Image (tube, rainbow, N blue to C red):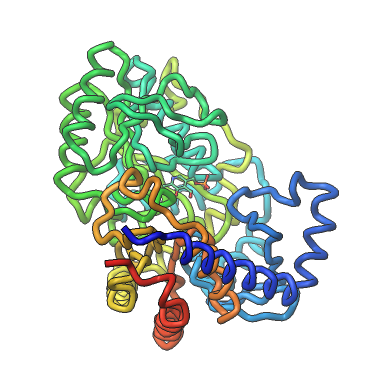
Length: 455
Ligand SMILES: Cc1ncc(COP(=O)(O)O)c(C=O)c1O
């Protein structure tokens, strides 16, 4: 075994130098941060956006580009983790917003034709008998779970390690051993009602957990992503997902597919591409055209728990559920801009881009995961080729290399998330994607000693 410490020391030195350049290059971002800490805890109101030593403050975005307060221009490869799929000022969305302001207005506090129109479009596109709106993906999952609870008369849920279903519905990053683990973090709603399957993509383990929870008479729903997004952009194998659906159904539970991130990957969502026919689906992100948005829907009999015409129906409140801007922008975005044809060719473009990144990264500590226009970058000691679940990379991550990469991509003019998540934007030029591949190649070459996997 080679002694890893000399390369670790060299990585740390490179990281310190990159961080020092970051501080020197971004004085106005630092000044903004210093002001922000006076009114926001840590200067932050969306944890993901915090980066030490301070976050870059953006001045504006246009199309697939961002400009920060220090005047740097970036190719935006983060795409606001999928909410920014259409870019920052898509003409279709602008038109829809202007029309909504001029012709309808804000906060009417009444039903408008716009929610019906958007619901019909989402129903047709994603195969949902009935749809309801929320203002975030988190809420969509909370209300879908509530529907499952009411429908089944049970409370419990099974979720997967590495899964992310919203700010208050996260799995535990710090899971312990064993097949059935309650590893949810403290800010998870109804923490005690969820059981976490430790390995995503492990059908035998999932079955055991589902059966164990159902045997206690507690299982209302199994909630899963067809590709884990925040958990590392790790695709679910179709046998796994179909098997989980079967296990949920056999055990009297609803199968809820969280498509908040993945609905963009195929015209009817990733679930349709994989033939999953879920009982309920949750949606969000770009489907509001860039405005705060969420939706959930599916089987008519399940969604009827929210039908206010029926005695004993559950309430589903939310001041902004049918807010006119999101209803109009989302409708226009899906109807006119992200058509099924555009969706297919965009994701094919993403597949080609990811393959190029994979070719460049082969044999290094950088691994590439994902599907279509969503891409994960992982920095691990062994440069793992097959990442099936978050558990596979646990203890092997190299955050020093990940952070070094992030600082140096910023210097090269690319906005990526520090955790290594890329969500492509429709308007990004192929030349810009190729330029990123070259920037990655340069990085790997420049840091050859740090990045090559020891044989
Ligand atoms: C799969 C998944 N579900 C739910 C959510 C929560 O959506 P929101 O941030 O709109 O609450 C996210 C957000 O990243 C997500 O990726």
